[in-house]
Amino acid sequence: MRNDVGLTDLAPDSKVWIFAPNPLLKESDVSLLEERLNEFASSWVSHDNKLKCGATVLYNQFAIIAVDNSFVVSSGCSMDTLHRFISTLNIEFGVDFLNRNVFQYLDDGAVKLIKQGELKTALQENKITSKTLFFDKLVDQLDDLRSEFLKPMDSFWMAQLV
Image (spheres, rainbow, N blue to C red):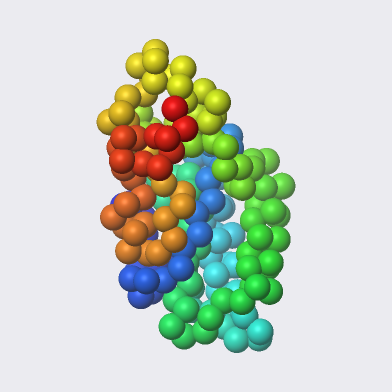
């Protein structure tokens, strides 16, 4: 995993949220996104208690936020705050970080997007294969982010969609 420096002080079972932009971010937006994520992480609270959390951008695309619930548990109100924050990022960067019908995969080291409805055709045309590495945005613990975020299509739940 690249650039997980913002998450190094958190417990392995820390809760993780992964937000992927559609369309992909411009290279010039990556450092600004990381700055915004870190500002949010440094001020995120649950019932007036500071959360132990971290944030980073992985593969120059994925906005990652993690919270170590062994200190202060994130609540429903703090989840609302997180989603409002992500909504502001959607506007600021002109992308949709919440679209779950678009998948990201690696192609020659670059992150590419594919819509759910295009998977079957792309597989038939060999644009992707069962060994193409896809990003699993549903991993929800820091340890899983480090070990299971990137996996071949044939061992990824979304393979059932084709």
